[in-house]
Length: 113
Image 1 (tube, rainbow, N blue to C red):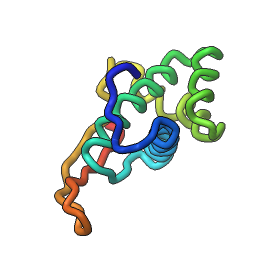
Image 2: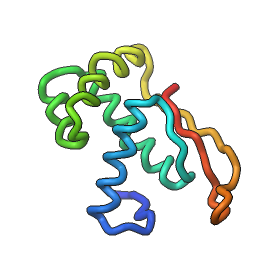
Image 3: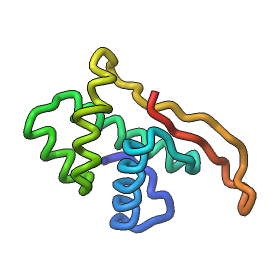
């Protein structure tokens, strides 16, 4: 990840958050978050889906190196990735839902297409 947003976190915290958000997105199909986090999540999630489309053992191990939950990786390879076999990228959609009540941060729904 050469060009990335820091999102106000130290590296370990940011990477951990992106891992968790990716797992949640793949598990539930959509999540609500801020615009900046969604844009950063999109990069990671699309990379994971591309690994799932490859489907070989090396791709599965690369996915497991990033997403620690084996059940999520299994779902990625068996359910999510096959849906996108005829699609070249653009697996996620970001929809604006308005400002957050507490601090006015712009909120979005990021979902799998």
